[in-house]
Length: 418
Image (cartoon, rainbow, N blue to C red; front, side):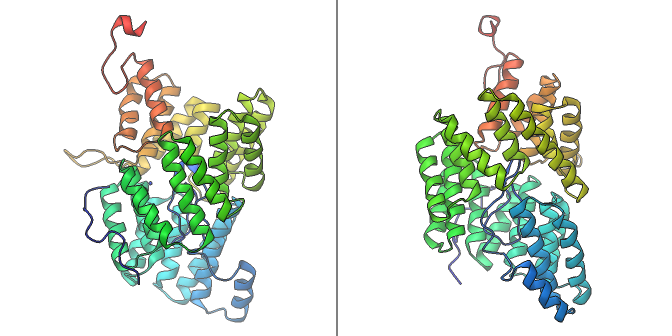
């Protein structure tokens, strides 16, 4: 067992894709869950067909049923096909019937709940799994992800530190970095990722880490460094989609629309998730191809409907998409539902605690409905942790401008406003 990465570090307070338990990548929302990491660190050793064949011969193998459940969650992650989620649910329940309380099945149910965006459920399953096996890395990773998504950043940092002390490894290192990034602690996030890269040997892990370093640079506006990190990710894992997504953004930022369009077309061909479809559509619009853009938006809306039919809570995706490309009233309904689900009303004299992504979505939906005074506190909540999301900061600037306020607060005078 390697020495814990952050032994002796400060315990100061301190997230999107689909998640696979102890896979290398934490959930990382960006409008929708982008596919995150290679999945190799936590993926079942056997493929779906092999597991199915083995279980036909050994139908009482609880560990086999748990592995098949995780394989289905992973299959959904890499294909965007949410019909695998009900299958995963069925076989994970079968595993628990064969061996009640087994930690692998409980951790699998936590990973499934997180993939469906049920983060309260993911936290409950992770806690049960860790009670059965305190050293379970998959359950520990799911627990950190759930706490992050619920806006409990102090608890997420504590959970990541605890997991690092018990069973350090790439899945935990990358989550530590993400929590630090959400806190605005970019230098520390980069340090952790650099240490993780030094210990990584799997190409998928190395590609994920390079991509996250690219994201840190992108959020800082450093296109040169971001481009180099995305290129490194694609060198060690050719065709790695999150890095291709980053490369497309860098190309667009440098004015290479043709190159960016080629990257975006390849991404949606391989994985037609709403975030990728929407970004491709917006790029097509900017290139003067509105009809082609509308086709991408239609597919994105269809994905959300299919996902909801398979148990996925797609309110965050719906809120952001409808705010920019659809029905503002539908956007606000979805954003409020997401915020209220993730950010329950506190008890007396306690501040409401919420994740930054839900706060940003609600702010933007309120803006889309012309309710900027209501939107402003949520936009500020989304940026208050120091997380350097270009989208969050852009939303805040637009809302402040609509209210005639200076960036960062304070009303502008009439002369400035004119």
